[in-house]
Image (tube, rainbow, N blue to C red):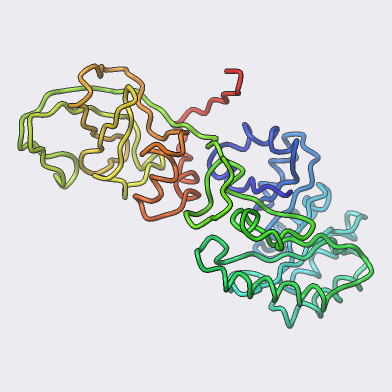
Length: 349
């Protein structure tokens, strides 16, 4: 299993979660600097880097980054033949081969070598003593959708490419993301790359074989102020919400500056004393206005559950994603404001 810990573990906090994840899995990062972070944490777990430094850096910065990746033993993903020369040069300078996986574009049209071009690229790698091919991968575009026909076509292209590029070495083959891991067992090969399910969130409402996942994240704050306002009061920037009754409203110290999506304005709820408090008006940069009229026991300083770790709660990651018209990954990855303190809570409290 190669668990995705890129983007600070999808916004959950790499420093907190890597020790637990690394007990069970290799790790998959996007950027070389993320691989450096993993190694600086003292982790010798295998690291797969999606973006080869040879592809997106230039000059001395590129040489330094490639050299460091090789020294750290990170596996680098190759998508084009132009990446081979700088990798081989760095490997010669370090005195050890660069371990690489080749990514094949089986239909997503994002990154990867086209299937018909993969044999030539792989032969070039095999012929270069500074490079060591250990894997071939691809990525699904629609494995999280109800119709899996295109995912099946991608799988067929991947299998055909692997057959065409077969060689004497045993390669690590991987294409399965979270939804494919759950619903497409024939995609598992000899490695899988789970992402969002590692953090306890369902990858899609269309997944058939759901695991009993428990979300890893719970976000809370404190009520700043509470006041009574008359009927007809309007709330927030643009005055987009008018109150139809005398109401009791409160402020919560979080906003889009902390990654709480503005698209949740007038739609989402927070929870206070286990009761729903609807958001009134637009989400501001630093705060929300919420309706606590139906929660008479609410007091300044009370805890506010902004995001629940109960997957069935109206303010769970999955339900907030549905309200915002996005995916759980987006909700989590946005939560990266420096003003939020992260605390690790274990099962024993």
